[in-house]
Each structure stands twice: as C-alpha cells, then as structure tokens.
Image (cartoon, rainbow, N blue to C red; front, side, top):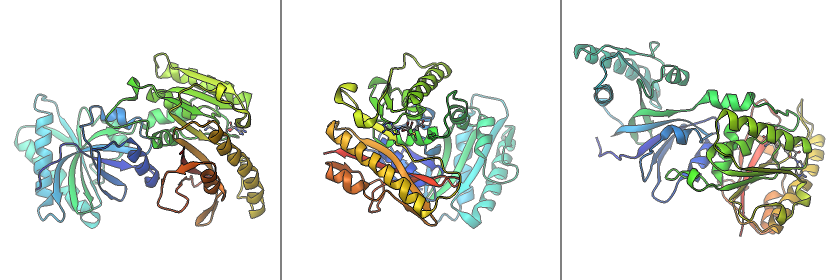
Length: 413
Ligand SMILES: C[S@@+](CC[C@H](N)C(=O)[O-])C[C@H]1O[C@@H](n2cnc3c(N)ncnc32)[C@H](O)[C@@H]1O
C-alpha cells in the first residue's frame, strides 16, 4: 500500500468522455492535478477536499459519479479481495459506528475485466460474514453480483444512509473508493422535459451539455463557489434559454438575446419556471430581442465574464441529408457563423467564448463548416485546444440526430 493522498477523487465520466474531461479541466486551478485515466474513470488530486461533492456534481453535466479514494494500491495486487474487504469493512464500521440499524452496502468493480466477478462476489460475501460475526446486521444491494446501478444508489440513499464502495483500476493503480456524489438524473430530466416552453424546431440543448459548455469557459472552479462572484454570462442565441437557466442555477447573472421574439418570450417563461421550481433567490436576468448582426456594445452590460451560445444549426432534419443539401445548409450557416465571429471581434469583449456550431455526420467522420477556425484566427481570436485534433474543437453528438454540435472555445487576443 502507498501513502494516501487525502484529496484524491475518482470522477466517472458520462457518454462523451472527451467533453467531460475538458469540463473537469475547466474547473481545475493551480494545485489540482490529473493523476490518471482509464476507460471513463479519471483520478484527480485536488488542492482542497470537496466540502460539498454533491453540489459540485450538480453543476458537472459530464460526470456521473464522484468517489473519494479510501485506499490506493499498486497494480497488480495478489491479495486484492482481502485488502479491499479490509478497507471497506473499516470504512463501514467507521461510518455506522453510532447507528444500530441494518447496514446497507454495495460494491462495484471497474476495469479489472475477467477478474471482476470473483472479486465482487467474494468481497460482498466476506464483508457480510465479517459484519454478522461482529453482531452487525447488514444487506448488500447487488444480489445479482453485477455492479451497483446508479438508480439503486439513489433509491437506497446509499450516500447518506448506506455505502457504495468501488474497486477501480486506473493505469498502474487500483483505487478503493466510497461514492460521495451521484448524478441527480431526475432533476436533469425535470429541467429538460418539464420546462413549459419547448421548441423542437429551433433545437434544444440538453441541460447537461449546457453545463459542460459553461464549465469549458473556466468560470467555475473546484475550490471556489460562484455565489460570491456572480459572474455575468451572455448567450447571443438564447432560444429557449437552456444555457441561461443552467447558468442561473450555478449562481451567475445572465444576459440573453435572440433574433426571434418567440425565443425571448420562451426564455423568460422558462427562467420564471426555473426560479420558482428551484427557489432561486433574486435571479438576475436581462433578455432582449436582437439579431447578432445588429448587436452593439451599448446593448450589453460593461462586464461579461463568458459568452456561451448554441447558434442556429440549420433546419430540422427528419432524414439523412444528401451531400447537396449539406452544402446548401453549410453555406447559409457559414454566413451566420462568420458574421457572429466578426461581430464579437468588433465588440472587443475579452472573455472566453464557447460556441456550439453545426457539423454533419458522415459515416465515420463529420463534415464541418470548414472555414471557421481560419476566420476566427483572422479576426484576432485564439482557439483553445479542446482536442488534440487540428481543428481544436470537440463534437457533441447524439446517435438519433443528423446534425452534431461542434464546440469551440475562442478568446480575443
Ligand atoms: C439552436 S437555437 C438555440 C437553442 C438554445 N441553446 C436552447 O437550448 O434553447 C438557435 C437560436 O439562434 C437564433 N438565431 C438564428 N439566427 C440568429 C441571428 N442572426 N441572431 C440572433 N439569433 C439568431 C434562433 O432564433 C434560435 O433561437
């Protein structure tokens, strides 16, 4: 066993790990360190312990679970099951020392492949045996000897009232962890599907993706809360207000514009709904109708900390577009996207600009609006390398859609 870093956490990433990874990077400050990655699991050493892991997870659209490392071992470990049982039992006894009720626990094993099932089964049974012998009644939730489903962690209230432990291999290390936060999937669904104003034609960003885009700007940090800073976030294509709503929940002040009057009404309706549902204390929002081409500095507040927006992605496509159709839509979108970059350069706002633009799925790759990076550089922007690829962008894609979102992070020099 090696000495333990007290602030070591494992982040289980969501469906698009590249985006989730960059989102976490956006929250890191000096002193926070990436330790390792394997198959959807990131080990992160933070400069301070997370005082409210669930609070952080609630704003991280790309992470499903946060676990705190209880013990760190060097792979391979000959006596892994015995060591894991000792560490987990020790933590169970510590956590439930002052309670006499039945102990509910579960164990999951990740990245150990063929060996997983035996480790899982033996650990669950050995811990139960030990607890029984020591006069503690207990129940493990994964009776099928499969990893614990996240829904079960929520239903059984395992973070507060039980314990979910995991054994996770990441590179040359094996971590034994305790789950400290789990994605509030019901709340995301509520915000996505129950908001009163919805417009399928103009497209709606899922709240999780909106959070990822906000976090790519770097305004949220692991070691500080937004509440004390009240940054101002501006979305020039606010649509139904998804980005603005997520920014308000994070504690930001929001400014939104859109060329469509209906979008302005819808955004206002959704913000009012959200403010009531989530009991926001004096949410500050300013929404106005404006075509990006007509935007002036005087329309905006003096201070803007980040511009986050999903531009128009073209008409709603109900079948796969032909190459000719893609070329036609791309030409129209290119005019808007280039005009947007030009306008934002003219306004001289020196903050991170996170923009989602259209890209078209093409078998194994994407057809991009090619000229965007070149134009951005021409107008004086730098492009943050969200990916090691030449375009520096990241793709957010859904299998049921023909148009993907290409996400860029620009900033004026
Ligand atoms: C994809 S939607 C944004 C959806 C939004 N992210 C949401 O989740 O609700 C794009 C929006 O851009 C707006 N738009 C299109 N062209 C515009 C322009 N030239 N200036 C300002 N807004 C524009 C459309 O009216 C539309 O509401």
